[in-house]
Amino acid sequence: MGISPLVWWFVCYGEVAAGLGLLIGGLATIPKIRDTAFLAVLGDMITRFSGIVMCCVVTGIIWTVIKPESLLNFILTDYMHFSLWAGGLYFGLRGNWAVAIDKKL
Image: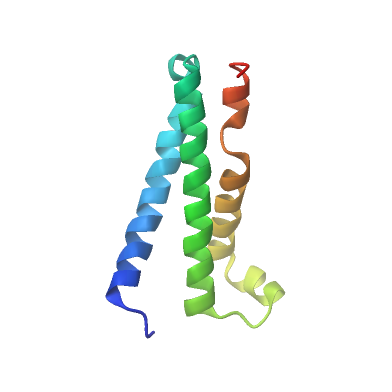
């Protein structure tokens, strides 16, 4: 595909790290952790960053590997990558801020 092994290394480890970051950021919703304002905000930041990383990695995969003919064709035929991209966008925009707001920061 004409992409260097270093780029593939970043893609592979970035996607795995983003998934782990979403899991770690989700720990901020546990009541004992949620009670600490610093940990609630840190969990929110980790969730948002991981979602943004997911969007970036999947966007790169879509542009370099899949090269869709049209947006509708891409959504209908490659729903797995579209779902990963939409999920990353959701977590990047929403995060866990509702948990942090409960602490009235």
